[in-house]
Every structure is written in structure tokens, then in C-alpha cells.
Image 1 (cartoon, helix red, strand yellow):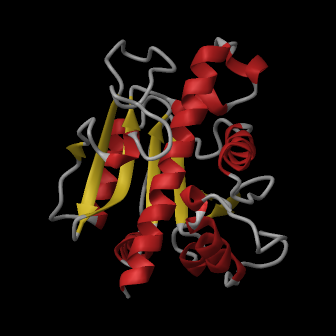
Image 2 (tube, rainbow, N blue to C red):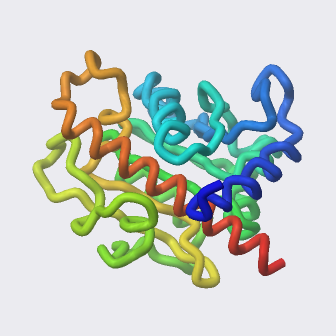
Length: 233
């Protein structure tokens, strides 16, 4: 096996130990993504073809065995602790309950990772709710030199621009806990739209490819970070 992907063995071992119900995650040998079903009225389910396409692309580009689709999970459910990689998207309101806040903080401070992708209109609601989870931490812009932009594919200017939204440049923000990036937030980028089936948004193939390549980077970075943390324990 190429040493570049040696972390795959550890990832698989983690996945095998999962206890997610069989109907939720049929094959426990495979990496998957936990899509967060949140309250508040926002469309947590938006871009329905995005994560299956991303999972397929990750397996093709890295050799990491992936599930065919994501697992839908509520933050108040202890099942999130079996899913090291969480994803949240949508256009509107988000509300985290007290149980959501406690579970998410515990998960992220114990080794979990959260990618939030603004599908337009999410920004103010996400910033308010994540402050409940990390009241003493700030969302900071991730420098272009950070490994998340270079760990597998090279993104010297940060996340790609997929949809126009307000015409602002795409940005990646994050929250660090004990030096570890635990929340990565893509703003004015809309990676999820780029991961969707080609006929949904009619984006050029070059834009869709850039979105998928960035998605690979985020997952590879998160799993390598998890590998390092496990090795230190």
C-alpha cells in the first residue's frame, strides 16, 4: 500500500468499531459522513445528491473505502459519537437545543470534526448557534498555508468559488480547540452545490471538479488529524 494512504487502515479500524444501527449504516467497514438534521426550520436536507457523489469521489481519488450515502443524525442522538465526520448545510435558520450543544461540544473536543457549508442564508444563524458550543472561541479565517488546503490537492487561494451568492470571495473559517481544527466553515463558496449531480445546477465541469477536490481535502485532513490524535492517546 502506498504510504501516502497508510492512515486508511486506522480509519477502517475506527469505522469497524462503530455501533450505529444496521439500518442507518449497513456496512460498518466503510467511511461515511454524518449529515446533521437540525431544528429551526432550515433545509438541512438540501443538495440531496451531494454527499453520495462526494463519497464516491473520495474513494476513487484516495482509495478510502466509503459508503454509498451519508447517515442522517440529530445532534441530541448519541449516534454522533460513532461518526467522526459531521456535515451541516442549508439556507435558513438553525437552532441547537441544550442537548445538541452538550453532545456536539463533547464530540468535537474528543476528536470529532464538523464541516459547515453555507448554502446561502445560513451565516448569521450558524454563527449564533456555534457560539453556544464554543462560547470562548472565535471563528477565524483559515490561512491559505493551512494543511487543509494542501493535504491532498493544492488550493493556494483557499476554497473554490462555486456559486455567486453575494459576489464575495469564498472564505474558509474555523474554530480551533487545543490547537486542533474542529470546525471548518466554508462561506460564499457553496461546495455542496458543486458536489450535486451535474444536471442540478448546470455548473461547468471545471467548477464541479474543484468542489469535489476540495471536499477530498477536507475529509483527508480531518481523518489524518484524527489519526494523529489517536496515536497520541
